[in-house]
Image: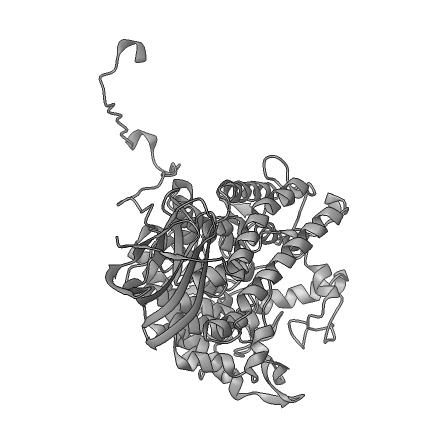
Length: 632
């Protein structure tokens, strides 16, 4: 591959010093977090019993950044810690009874999506391990109809049979025990009732901890909400796309596109609005008196359309990754545009409705720029940029960033489009302050382990990758409920043969231009802060190698190139500024990297089938050498 060598001697800029300092602080911080809350084997120091269907997602979320941090350039420890914590959480919540076959036995895809971000990040850190390769196949087969034990999918009608699904299949009835850990939350937070006409339960809110009230609510949930397909099941497309990235098997790509197309057809049949409940016969509103609203995590309950819109966006991103066609984003675009058409000016600003019930559209709030940023990053389309800027004053976007979760991308959008030049320093300082705050909370935490709630550890995880991901890879943070990292660039340490930035190296993508989509160019700055050591790294276009390099412009030289990898050499105290021009979405995406690739025809370990007559199986072992007498 082409090698470019930096020649410019430079004093490290402020953003580079802050970036490397943040990495070094987090290299240590994660250990303090683990020392406080986990045993030597990685299991969480907590209670010995946990009921219901909730909780494993929060445990995975507490450590999910570890493999991502390693993939970005964190210490080698984090490759092992990320793996250790995944295995420990999986074992512990299997023992609690919530996981089966290493996957949630049953829950909804908002929570599945939060859990399996961790699984997707493991593949960025250490792809093609046999265990994860096999898991990717097994987990995807829970939803494609290839696993008879997990009866989640109707392949004829292209629908997932329940909002509550997992490794034990679709759950068509919910029990009181399933909701046991949620009743306090639903009773004490400001959530509306699922429906306005629950017999004997006047709204708008109710005491879910009252057994008589809860029984009436649960009866109606099972009548109207427990059966059939809902839009948040589209988060499952990420799990199946993940299997495609591992295996390259067309059946997984086909499933993603078929299931996504089914929702496009349902939307067309519903006058352009995504219906939020599909019965087991495929009928819109089958259990809701033909109403297209009222489904689980649908247009009304519990959060309104926010998570539903995320699911449409993520599924569109997955479909575009697999096809390169930005029309796959139209489903999400159409719903954002429809809500915008319903806007009202309230308090001097435009607000859109996020809920729909028997009274019509309601719950007007300012439109978030976050999902339009996701669309723009994929497409580069001016129309998607316009969707971001509809919020009004563009300077307001500068302040919409956070150090956690899936938000905080609007300020980044402004930055890479030539505005908010101080954004890198601000977001790095915000991240550093968040790390420091998390460490303070760890030190001051004296709550007894058996008294803490399941979300206790999430806010105390001091490994916070949002700023690093945005600035180094030129991408928004993924949608928190189950999106892939759709980055335009990845880095690999050429000397240590591992993913991430090498030691002492800082990176910044500070300009992105879509002159002729699907072609784009962006400016990259690389800095070697060490006055002693040479550093060498590989660049890969696209998190999954889906893009190709076309041209590299560096310090007066222009190189024409055809491929997805480039090598850069950084002598001590040098920096380099490059403009990379890429052709987008023209390669088959995979977890291949310049240092590791999939073995052709890679197989998985087969599970013994108890239904097969042992006498019908012929097993012959042929050793590589003659058997000696003492070996018999």
